Image (cartoon, rainbow, N blue to C red; front, side):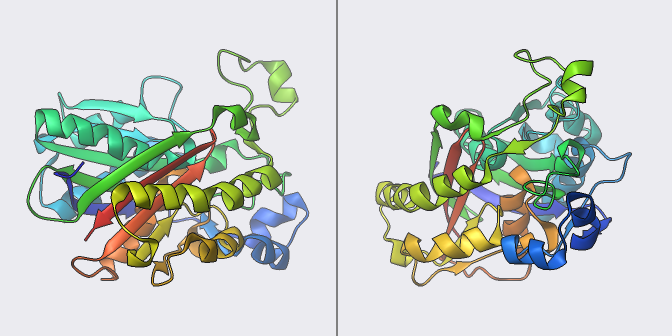
Length: 325
């Protein structure tokens, strides 16, 4: 990954703002409860006519403008999502068509909330072999798979997309190191039970509500709090840097209270943690690129600074990328 750089970033969130009171009422909770448990104050939800590919395309166009290249210059497009437009074809095929990038290789990556860094790793190896430019997009529309009465999940999620344009060039932030992990023995902690080959969607599964996103929140929290510090330590050792050398931390925006709990245990005493979840909620695979884009656009990063991206979520999976701005 040492020759791959980020040439531009972009993001898109839907216009519709959903307050804690609106989302909490069907679940029997209020704004104070949601804020105390999650630090989320509002989120954006897609309109009925908007699909994941629409959000992804808007973020992609913003990233292409930022990078100063056209869609025709892309050699690969990877969309990280666990809420595709349809089970098939890949959502990336729709994005490719919308952008007019005919002939560009396009595929989806499903590593749930860790997906964007997984996609970053995949396109990095492709670029080193083939050259050209890559578009990595994290996009999710979780509002379509949430049970309105489940307070454990419905209050957490928003919809959005974030994107990065990458290329093997000498300008732009450098992707120094990437690491990916999956803990399949914990795959039952986060899932959508029905709709696949194991349990096809039918009237029975719909009546049982098995088409909805389900999460064992306490076990997921335990995984993050117990596993993330050691995973970060190991990753930074592999990358050849100390935790105290990290200037910025851009984590998956899962839950603000949980992030505030775990951050002091990561050893990054000089780092600033960036959060966007108060306004956008947990946007799945989109949360890291959205947060990275917002920080970059407000000038939060200085040349030479080290930025740690950390994804974690369903699988269970964890992913890390070290950037040098």
